[in-house]
Length: 95
Image 1 (cartoon, rainbow, N blue to C red):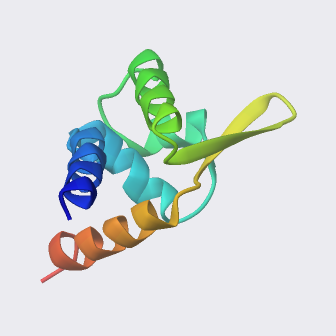
Image 2: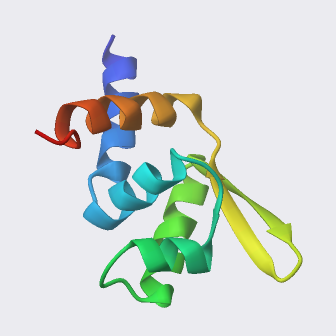
């Protein structure tokens, strides 16, 4: 159980950033390019967005796919999809 707790803590540490959480919430809906993500997240520079995408990719949460001149991102870890779905139900529903 201790090993699982450490694994979960590591996952939560990475997604505990508001911008990374927003990126994952958007990517839970499907595949998006950097430009599309930038349009959906207010107040983030493309440089900061790229850094967050890199951190998520290094953690193994997302993967990229180049199509033409654009790079598209999607969630590659089913556990992350499930976590984001739960968070959306609990915190993103309209009253």
